[in-house]
Every structure is written in C-alpha cells, then in structure tokens.
Image (tube, rainbow, N blue to C red; front, side, top):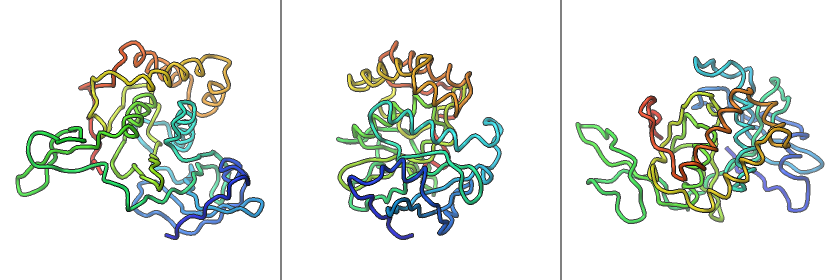
Length: 273
C-alpha cells in the first residue's frame, strides 16, 4: 500500500481530519479477521491515509457484545491520550461508506528501527532484553521469546493492563520514524472480566516506574464521575466496564507493581506475532 501523506503542521488536526474528512476506500487489509479497509481521508485540502473498520464487518465474539469493537478502539485511544503517552494513533468513531465504524490514522512502520521482539537460544534473555517464555520453533525445538527492555514498551505494558487488552501481539507494534512507537488493534479491550493477554510480560511483578504511577494518578482523577473523560467513555463502553476500569487503575496504584498473569486465562496470545 502507498505510504501515507503527512498532515502539514498548523493545518487541521488529525482528529478533525479523521472525524470530518471525506473517506475513500482504496483497498482491504486481507490478513485481518474483521473488515479492515485502507482509505484516504480529505478535509479542507489536507489528506492522509487511514484505516476504517466498519461495525458491520465485525466478526461476533463469544466474550464481547456484537458491534462494540470499534468503540473499544476509540476508548483505548482516549486512555492513551489521558495518560499522556500517545501510544495509540488518532482514532475516532464516525460514519463511513459502510456505516458507523472506527477510523484511525495510518501509521507506516519504519524498517530502520531496531527489533522489539526476538527468539534466542538458551535460558537467559541477554542484556537489553526481557524474557517472556519459551516458544515452539519446530522440529521439537524451543527458543526463548524476548522483548526489548524499552521504556516505550514498558508504558504500553501499563496501558494494556489498564485497558485489559486481550490480544497484544507483536504485529500490533509499529515503530515509527523519530523513535515513536505506536500500538494498534484494540478491539478486544475493556472487558469487565480479566482478559489480559500479552507478549509484554517482561516486567511482571516489578515495581512500576514513577512516571507510570503519576500517569495512573492523573487517570484515576479523570475517571471520576462528572469528568470529561468519564463522560466520553460512557458513550463507548458499559458502566460495568467503566467500574472495572476504575478498579484496575486502583489496583495498579495499590500494588505499585506491573501486572502478573492471573493463571485463569491464557497469558500469551496465539499466534504471538
């Protein structure tokens, strides 16, 4: 697919462009399990590439109400912004050629960035890496799956614990030029039950860094009844899911530590990448 056009500085904001622009479907991302359409969006002479996921193209899931994945994608963006980390590309809920859906700015991953995941021989991850677990690599062989000991990933591990991400795979990580890291595909999030399933277990049980605790304190305040963030989330997820979100934030602040696998749900998604 073609590289996205950059939004000129000082022009319309990405949010305005996505929410108000004219969507034109250019193709489909065929490896996705739900309908994912590659589009261009144009508004007031500014255009960019984006992803449009219509609610009508969602595949029903037994543990998520039908037609809610798009809203959860937007809620994940709202939480990422509230925590001040900008890990999720600008995302809006809007009408499109195939009805209401999620529209998200297209991020072109940089091939020049260093790897964030690897398979290594032996039992230790090595300097600069955190161990996740062993993976079957065929021919009755296993290798240690590791992820980079990277502060961007560490922030994402905290965000995933907050939004209760049930599907954090390696293919959802998009290193962008300039050192930015984006994360995509947040449809299976915010369930009221514990669904955390991720590759980013390298810090499990370790103390949260102070910047994470500060972000969680701000988020806790923003989630109080009557605050703007709480109002926006009420339009996207259920009251029970908002209560569970508040409880997860409170639990992270109480323990001051990264989440550990619960043992009641598969800890790592499959396939992991």
